[in-house]
Length: 142
Image (cartoon, rainbow, N blue to C red; front, side):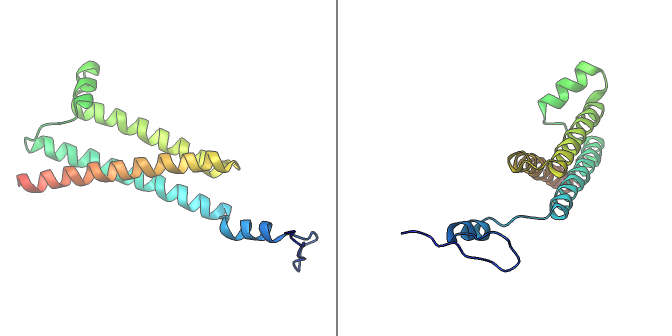
């Protein structure tokens, strides 16, 4: 079966039914939508990082112990303690999240944009889970 080209008003070239179906099945977001999405995910990552940092400091003051052995080892190795190590990792996370957000906003490569979106979504979800876990343990110890 052959596809006849279909002329669409406002376009200069005829398109086949398959081309039209491909356009409908894969909607494209505007660059403004991408920008808003990446900025929102970056801001959520920053907010949850701050909640994690604050809730960890409150939990340590309440006598709870840090369960993350990487944080303990990093704090001991640097001599900054657990909060110092957490601060360092927050700076690194935010720098990485900022890089992924800028990359996702600036690139025209959809594969690269998708990867940046996956990284930011993962960081946001992970930090949300960590923050909620901290808040849960603080609430049970009061």
